[in-house]
Length: 360
Ligand code: SAM
View (cartoon, rainbow, N blue to C red):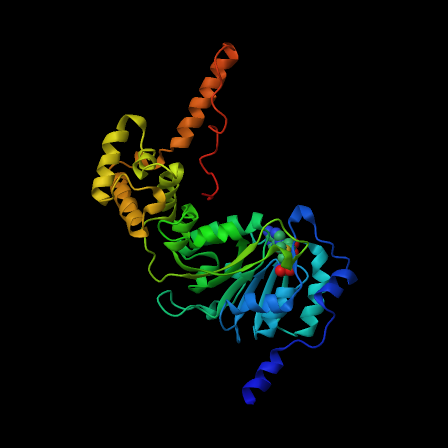
């Protein structure tokens, strides 16, 4: 009885529905900003439940938009909800919500990609990394174009215990395009196993909670959406700097369908490739004819450790980038072509930047 009274006190007073708010403030979804809204509060409640108990929690919601998910977070008992929204049109509607939940909703008009979350919450909510996670959650239904770069940035933050992870092992509940959600959580040997699977799973426990059909959103996106929950691990499964791990994983997955030694070779300049690849594969005790998708995280750890040992002896190896070499060769060939137009051009795609986003 007392518990139900307490729960009732979290709940928001009667408000216009999210749909009515959208009409009231003329909040047409901007196609350019990939805005797709969730108006069904049962669905937003279900997303919020994946975060675990929010009673008295501090929460950051990224991209609240018209505030459906925001209402569910408040109704779940969050004591302090900081929302970061880029589009000013949503601010008046969010202010209305803030008045309905006095002292519980803080509104930031800003870009989550640059906002300093480490300054967004009081330091006294921090918990030691080795202990339980802090009572701080990040929740969001973001455009796919933002959620993927953002999770890569946050994974690096997990590795370095910076940004939202200065408070401890902050948990994340985020939406992704279904295919990306599957990659993030793919296990060894599965078709979706990719760079993202390794980078997420060496640092976090990652759980693909459920899929939301595209038709649940207004307007309906082309694809279905996956809700993914992350809890940073106390001990990362690979104990090397994030950039080094990223480099090894990126190179190995460069040729997804080939034997993994093909990708490992590309960690080294051409003249040393055979010798150093053999050394790394032997030291790591990894079968060179396994496919990248068949490698376990302990095998990636062994590869990263072996590569790090080599780099410790020869630091110049660390700066070698195969794709950069290709790019330079391509530029040189192009300038030759300009003076001798009969030469054929390099195949397209060769000039791809070395900082290709973490996709497959
Ligand atoms: N959370 C709302 C919902 O579920 O109905 C809106 C979802 S809509 C897919 C994404 C929201 O994120 C929009 O309100 C958009 O303006 C906002 N947004 C997009 N990029 C952002 C960024 N870089 N920083 C903060 N908010 C952003």
